Image (cartoon, rainbow, N blue to C red):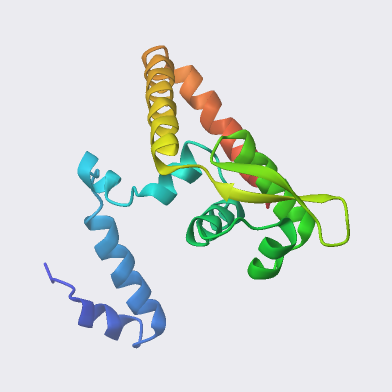
Length: 170
């Protein structure tokens, strides 16, 4: 029996770029294994939690971090939109969600041309920590209940539904 080395494969395919792809794919297929819990959790950081648990969009996360970094004074919708190079309507939608989730607060201030406008600022970190811990605990309990009651049929239906949603997005 003759052993075929990667070089041998290259000779078979006349050193085309297909060879490299085949070798890489063969190696990656051989090294596939189930990840440990620690490996799965390696990429979990505060941004991941904000996106996953609170279902924040990248724009909403960006606005939150902008407001957090500008703690000297609150910002208006126009100031945030200009800083982020986003439309006012996009910023307004994101701020509504951030206020509803309790991460951001707003207060009215007198406008230069009369009337008033709102300025937005992040809530104190101790409040946000407490809110996130409550949400994580509730999320854990809900996830635990769903998993304990899961059947193979329910899992298949959920996966099928997710695949359908992904196909509709494309």
